[in-house]
Length: 258
Image 1 (tube, helix red, strand yellow):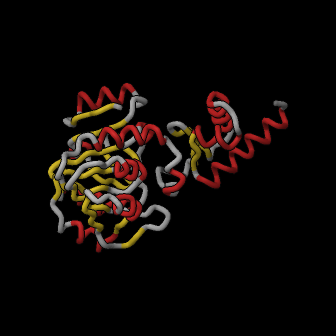
Image 2 (tube, rainbow, N blue to C red):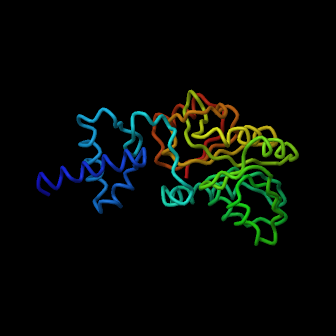
Image 3 (tube, rainbow, N blue to C red):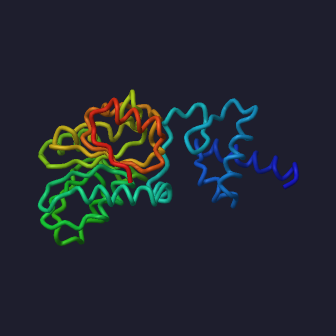
């Protein structure tokens, strides 16, 4: 690639970051049809003399974006898909026949819903896509909380949803997260889902957090709950070794790596 082509690609990359607020390495690989090492080199070169850009885990983002930009559900389905499916499958294996569960919104929770094979299961859903996914399963009774639907994400939230969720008592809650920090705990990009997420802990006997490793060591704008509120955390094997060590040594939760 000559100097002009390289310059044009970097300029295009910058414009994409400004437009989308952040880009993951896999996005760059797909968009420019390059290898992963090349995509990472693009990121390093784009950061030179560009004060508006910052390095984020597995990607590049805007300095002004403090965990506040969230891509739509359909796009998320294509990010870390294999990791999410492995996490979802492991989580489903922990559910017992006849249990009552409540499922949070998000793509990892969506994949979890696809893995449910249990009989006489009662499922409360806070996401209309997940509710639709489970409707045709004759062995599962599906309950959907009322409330406002967040367009583009399919989650149900707001004050009505917060009140409705209080009507349920379940064995297990399955929760997702936008960001996870050892010190700040679970944080979320948008305030819309916060009240419902907080109620997941209150209405369940145990709380399982399912999240791929890219969510760690990040902070989003809104605090949800400390990691001490979680009973089980399931993530993938790409988790940073230092984070893994701190989770094992400092937090009283069961950690499962897939």
